[in-house]
Image (cartoon, rainbow, N blue to C red; front, side, top):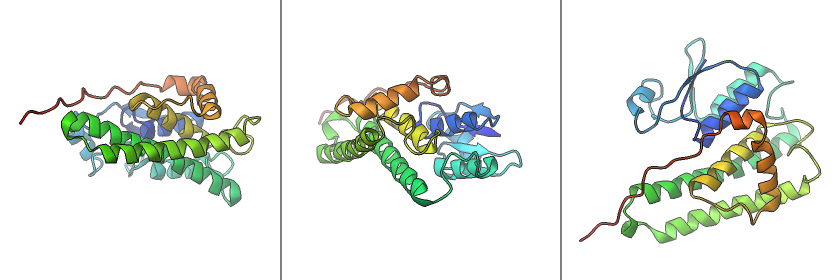
Amino acid sequence: MILIGMFDSPFVRRVVVSMTVLGMPFEHRNWSTGRDAALIRAYNPLGRVPTLVRDDQEVLFESAAVLDALDQDAGPERALLPAGGPERRQALQLIALATGAADKAVAMVYERVYRPEDKRHGPWLERCAAQVHGALAALEAHCVDRADQEWLIGARMTQADITLACCCTFTAEAVPFDLAPYPALAARVARYEALPVFQQFHVAFDAPAPTAATSN
């Protein structure tokens, strides 16, 4: 299989960590959605990452679709998302909070990078920040409840753990957001990030320089 996308994307990173945890070999194309957009669009009409080219040449994109296929390949005993019931619903909610925070962090980065400083929309940035803080607070509450447990759900690593680490690290680095007000979350993210599988695929986000203010 071929995985397309840079590891500074939390969505690409959660796929590559998952593939590694599941022991699935892959080739990597370190393509940027900016610099290499034409190359990516040859596989994905949206020009987005992650994009996965399977061995039979089927192409999957959007991390949730890619991860769903990987879980089906792994089988129910090894799948990273619980098969059903309350644990699956809880995992999906935690994943939605973490990816939602990362999505809003990306929106804030784009506003800073692509819009001149004097043209940035303050209310929009404030709204995004409030949404990120809401998600982090909800994740903090769950981490407090699971403070004496190694993993967020059940007795082994699930997709909720992987996504939490990838998305919260990105959010902290890219905007940046300080995780200190969320100590249980920060401690859990730090513990996950110390694991070799996360260290192996950590690439600090390096945004383009912000657009300078314009003059009239």
